[in-house]
Length: 133
Image 1: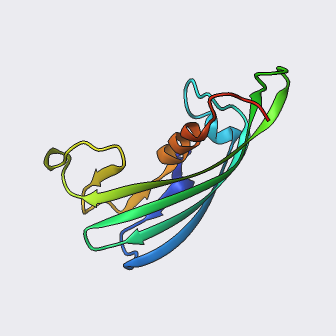
Image 2: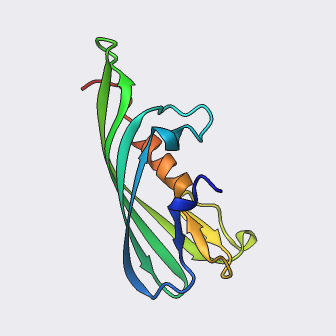
Image 3: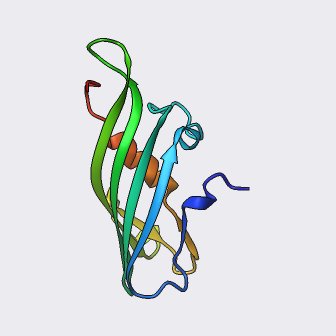
């Protein structure tokens, strides 16, 4: 079974408009990513999906903590994280698309959209430069 199946959103058959999803990721999730800067922690994601005829917009809000070594005292601390990110998913072929960071292109026949990769990326992007509490 796919380890990231729980992070799939069924977009085929989803009505136009706003939909809400919640995800929680922890140490078991981070272990699936090689050389992850995060090994332990717990992050809650609130995801708002705005489905439109030609695209959908995903607004991610994350809050939680990761275990990190304090840069001052070297003790293991619960480093708080809080951030918000947006991802735009458009229907179309990648060869028609101009490469953009916040825009992803998918085929119209895709029935589910897996957000695991984005949950991981947005968590790593939320990490501060220095680990202090």
